[in-house]
Amino acid sequence: MPTNPSIFERYEEIRSRMPQVETTSKFEDIELLLNIADQDTTFF
Image (cartoon, rainbow, N blue to C red; front, top):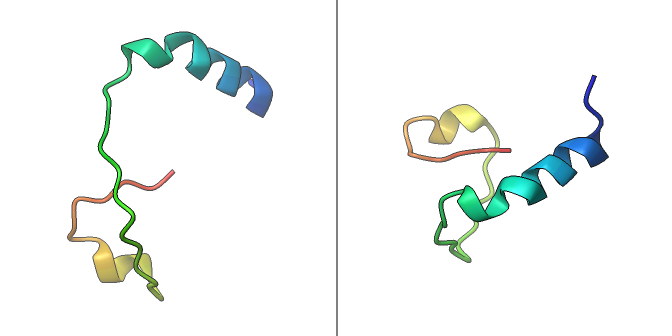
């Protein structure tokens, strides 16, 4: 089973091939994920 460090190391190996994303400084406090489920949002 992969460990967190090994997963991160693999990500760093392929990072240059990953798409670049624009980030925003906008944050929103929510009570439930269902409240924003219809938005195009990704959670990790």
